[in-house]
Length: 147
Image 1: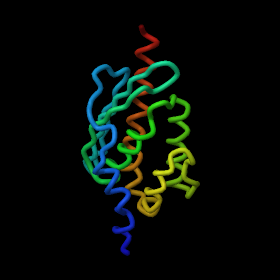
Image 2: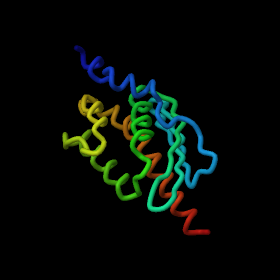
Image 3: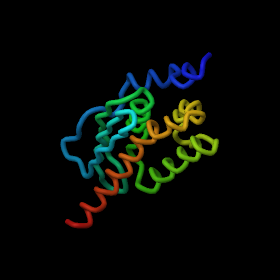
Image 4: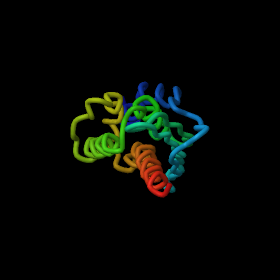
């Protein structure tokens, strides 16, 4: 198996194709649009908050398989989480990619990105949807504070 084959394994292809969470929210509490100018990935992430955390997420992601699969993982796991738990998973994902740290235990699908460790230029592809989610949450907190 070549390095390229292991990077784009079946799990990544399946998550990218499933596109969990794709779409728009009728009432978003926060929204973020980020892009990776190097490869053309673009993510629009919306969050709806209620109670102590995320009630729903929606994303529109255009880009490589890694970016689309990462956004799809968010679509599966983000509901029910709060800002602190999202910050923790982003930090754990960054450490996994950069330092070989273990996969966050409550997001096991992130293990499919382990082959990306060897491709530093692809780290941003994986991280971009998570950064967009964090920014959307931060913007929703600012909106909540101003009302």
